Length: 163
Image 1 (spheres, helix red, strand yellow):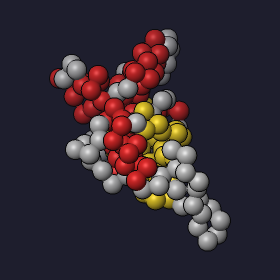
Image 2 (cartoon, one colour; image 1 turned 90 degrees about the vertical axis):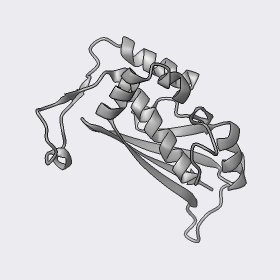
Image 3 (tube, helix red, strand yellow; image 1 turned 30 degrees about the horizontal axis):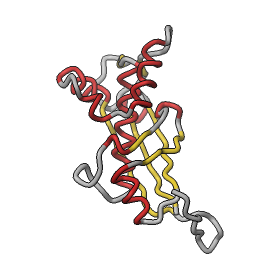
Image 4 (cartoon, one colour; image 1 turned 90 degrees about the horizontal axis):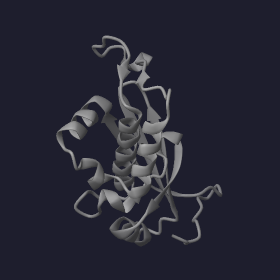
């Protein structure tokens, strides 16, 4: 997308859409174990490679300690999740947030139209293809960025569609 960015009166770039998504790591991990082909349907080749890379890193932390905001939830201590599952959940959450920022759902675009690259790194530039890209172009979106927060139990993604 190579449109020139629009600015607000204060001179900053314009946010055309914001999307937020929360994924329960426990629920996502259960879905992966119940549905063998799920990863192939929701992740791009780049995201699958990132998941494989994370699984192969020895000594990578695989658990999280609940934060203050999660302490009211029933807990028996830290919750362990495989790094590859966390990366896949982060990618999925970003994809859902991106779709919301564009005002579309799964009937208008495919999850594989959105490539999050390395979703566990924090702030991502997100690449679009197919119908997601067409939608972004129709809205004059110049770029999509996303932030990801991973806690012991959840992944929170926010996506911003910029003019």
